[in-house]
Length: 239
Image 1 (cartoon, rainbow, N blue to C red):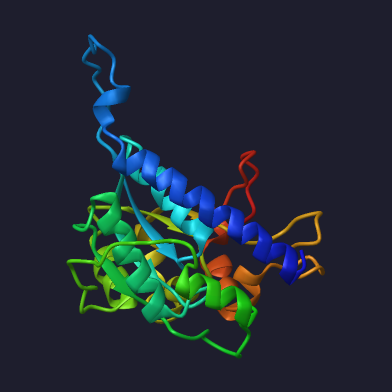
Image 2 (cartoon, one colour):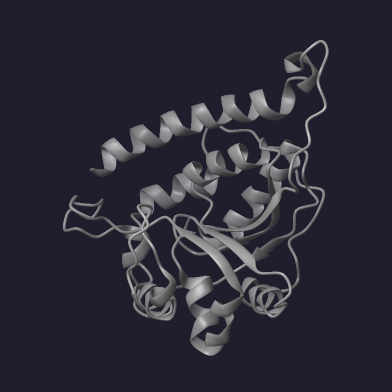
């Protein structure tokens, strides 16, 4: 996908995201409720940590998750990728303010890859940082003083609460932790990674994708540590 095509796509995503957020959080929820609701016994919401580079596609994913009753976002960690981390943190906090969930803690993560200087195109990053055409309220809370890596180390140190991680951005935050604390993999109950391309060109045109090409050592570290436990969506074991 060329830059021009990608920017057109992002414009559509921004508009769709604004509409989706309005529908989920601004319109009265009661309007969609049945006249005579029947009590339904449901399981406790599944807690998940979202690691994101604050792209518009990630905001759509967050809007979707916040609208579900079976998912509880326990924390959001922001990583360098489409966003520059300070702008990404600010946008996530403002997005959560609009969504009515300012209580979800947000942690600033790595501002550069573990190695190299690969980066998304500047035009993509500018749109992600500034969110043209989208109006978000001022956040009433600040990001956590603790770094994303420190939070992940502390959270995964609680062996009595295995963690679910949804990794929507480059894997730098998680890779940085596993590089110094390889034991942390034992506390990860489930990790879903947005990255990689099989039998398709990928958005780099050579089988690769930006999310795994930007932090190559992070991806290799995570793959090495978790490979014995990895399965495809079809259940095939990779290890």
